[in-house]
Amino acid sequence: MPPIAIPQAAPAPSAFAAEKAEAVSGKIITSPIVGTFYSSPSPEKPAFVNVGDNVNAGDVVCIIE
Image (cartoon, rainbow, N blue to C red; front, side, top):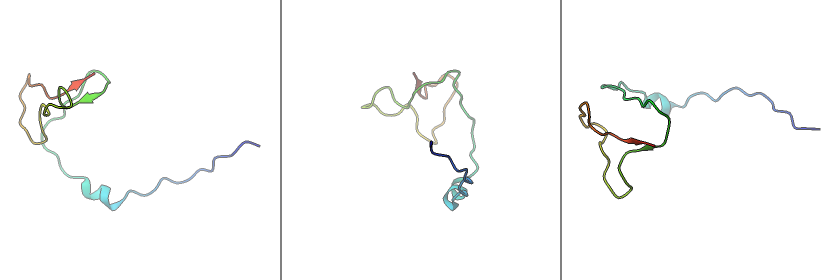
């Protein structure tokens, strides 16, 4: 006889998740494609930008491959 899955309720959100929710200012940058996100040009190089940096139109912020 094959095993039967027993439905279960999803676990309640943890207190940690509630603490982490905070207002974020700025704009969201979206990608027109799906792929792997790279924050720097190579593992040895620094990130293009860091959290909190100001960016302008045309600035490279990541590579999506």
